[in-house]
Image (cartoon, rainbow, N blue to C red):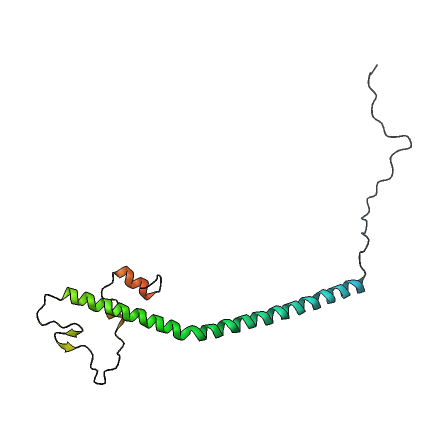
Amino acid sequence: MVTYKQDMPPEGGFNPYEWAARKPKRLFGGYTQFALFAGFTSIAWIFYFRWRNTKKLNELEMRESRVAIEPFLLAERDRAILKHYRKNRDEENELMKNVEGWKTGTLWGEPVFYNPRNRYVKPALEELLAHMSYREQEDFKYDKRKRF
């Protein structure tokens, strides 16, 4: 004889199994969903236009600031270039101090530029970069580091 009791179905059988798909209860009807969509979209457009106007005002302020500061930046650049030209002249004086008849800024006494009105002539880039190493020249040309 067996000492354990085998599991059997309950008397009267199991409840019927529901295999049909159940539809979930709708949260909102069609009109309500459309109204919510229209409301959220309207609010989003309002926020978008406010953001866009703020962005345009900020961009306008930045443009005006850049236009206002441009003369100062150009003056600083010109000042730095003149300082560098002075450094080049000092280095040329140091290099050529033992050469008889050498005058700084000329080529054996002849002026490099024909300048009867004594106006500023913008020198070539090679003159500016004359006493720099190759790496410094490349950095200067492509604006990679602080120049002066």
